[in-house]
Length: 290
Length: 324
Image (cartoon, rainbow over all chains, first blue to last red; front, side):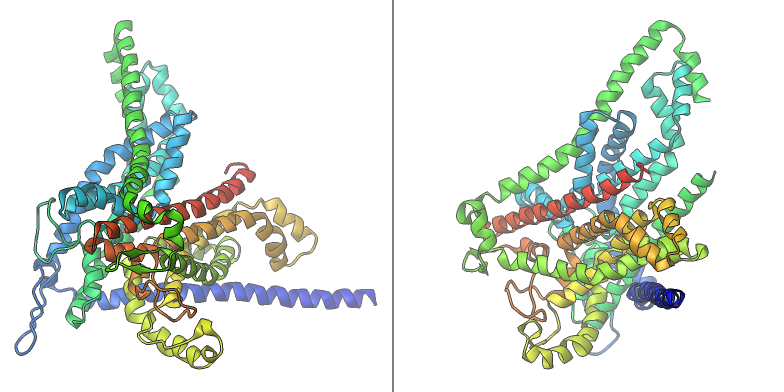
């Protein structure tokens, strides 16, 4: 009697076990499907938009009626993204790296706790709130939408990423290296600049690249600061076009040619993100293995 | 090498003392930049508080978030529809994303063959990094047509007749439910990654104890691992929720941008972030701009609460597991 009941219970437990494991594997597969579909769709649609003109020409009005349709390109958006993100990077790098150095090399006091809390809050802050702040500070004051306002907004989004990565990478440097330098009589700042930072250099570059990839794809803060511009513009005090902005605006257009260009821009953005993240991953894995 | 250089150059005691002063200067420089990070946050709070002055004076904060009327031309600004849309679309996203995301976490931490683990984990993390405008475009061109023909229309024509939650007309297909679906796809990688991390740090002896008692693999997961990692998984869900609450582009592109509160999930609505992004560049009046700024402040506070809870929960789990 007893063994038979145990056997029956064992059988049902095995069945439940098998059922739940299959369910887990199955739902993983099902959940990954839309994500894979999105990537495949972006590649399929985006490649079609890529030709020489796409990279060498800026906006041309869609001509209705007879004749060849001139589609133009997205050069103005590429230039805009490079300028906006580049200016933002110049401002974000010193703040992010120095703050990271402070957190890693002078930890454990109250200032470090407060600073770490603030980077956490900044990381989680909705990007539109940052955009609104840049809008009040620059657009409202100067009565002019400008690339500079967009850069300022992106700085706020980049700084916490750079700070966090720098701090973590400096912590990976073994204390024995610092102690060796100090034992030879080097002061702390000299140790930091000539021993700790060179050892963590590739890690710091990693943080900068991740911040770049994040900033390049941000749309919401640019929408309320940079506004967008159909012409090639180089002045940071004027509205500019940017790749994510163009992707958004062209999606809303009723013309098939513009929708296609939106996908081309989206593919460019996705490639920036994928290449950056994968190369960062490969670089860190190599260093950890060493 | 640089070290020995430094040593030979530093020479006598006086030089070394001067370099010690360098320590003080370097510390001050580093502290200055680190405090700039604090200043950034302070500036954001101060500027949005200051910029929302007019709206706070006119409506009061409570009046602003409870009023349902949003009419820029008539000068009426109430945030209730936007806040309702933000919260409901995020909740839909969380309900849709959390179960499969936790399953992915279980799969990646336990069941996955070793050879697949690294590439799958990498894929999940890459998907979290894809710009939200791309998700929004996919929503517009692929998800909405599919959703309108196969989900919204059939549902509204059958159950929708009796249950107001699914009432038609579906029209273009933009609305709360489809926004929640896009947000779910976006936050799924976040929740999955955190779940995997907290499940991986469950001590082996917990699992071995269950196995020694004759438990099946599923029973180990169900009774040893999930309870141990529960707080961390909830933390991951709150992180995902925070991301959904603050998300602008994906919601802006598929939700329909109508500041109304409707019973049906198929009707167009709006979220706080979408409303700010679409209206701030072309405001009707100073009060309009000020109201949008106040809305940004409210949105920031909501996400701050969600994220604080998330941090506390995840932090507690990692502390329990010996600070690994």
